Image (tube, rainbow, N blue to C red; front, side, top):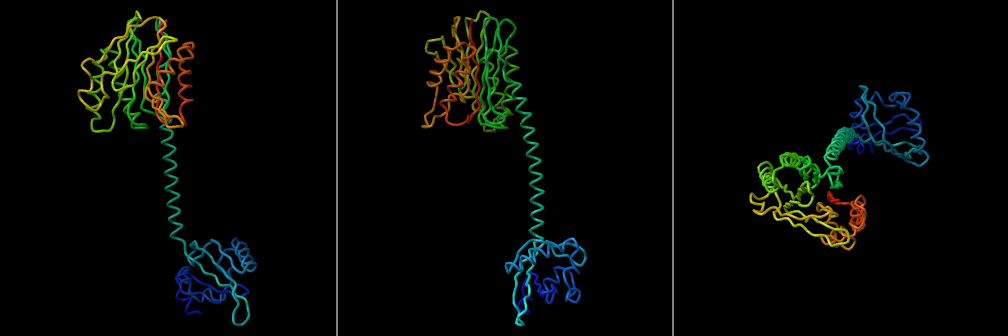
Length: 372
């Protein structure tokens, strides 16, 4: 049996009923760095520190009770190093009728080093995750600071809403008065979700604000934004749609320009909403995306309510897989227009949420206006 045990790669030790080591194979001697005469006939207290002996006695008692034991501990090397190992012990009966304990020790140093590297890597990943979450939270606060606020401009009242499908999104809205002369309204939807879309959206937002502050004609603004995105992001997958409107001080005329965007709506309480369709294509993909007749004019009257929104409102599905679509939103706008203006925004959003199965999967922007 000794010749067989000597062939094993694992360390093997045999102890008698007094825990004296009566056999240790070469693998165990190499593992511990001992000479055979240093451990032959010795008991654990000659090798292990005193504080570890109670644990070893506990494991021995388990082996005597059940005939075997298995646990993870360590092998004390001659130079003081501790080698992690699996101890597999079994009670055997020798030819002399006495009980002996056969213990196989498997070196798990490689596994332990790998576990330590994994723990270190996980700790770094968790730290980076916390940093990313903090950065996303800051980005979300920055993005929320760009959301247009409700305001009153002469005889015009404006309510706005924005919600990202994830922490940050690719939608934005603008409500920008130009003194007492005009009021610009805009919603924009950049393709995709998440950080990339949010960065592109914020860049387009800056260009949009600069153009609007110069009171640029809406058609010129569309061409400028289209050229800007193609020049700076032309080799990317990003494109965007938008709907823009400009009201003038008499609040009786509105200039509208849309590019690949869901139609704006004008509604009188109790009536079917009128649709203002986009004349231009999506922006950021083709140099001639903006139509030659990019804008249209709409006459307004007191009581009219104007609704601009992104496709996070329209492209939602119910439990049967049916899309809400423009017709569905048009009906929701008709119903919500019967509510007081301050309740109309919530009325539209509540109806969309009731239709939709599950949480939102796209960013949502909504700007509604009432002429008083």
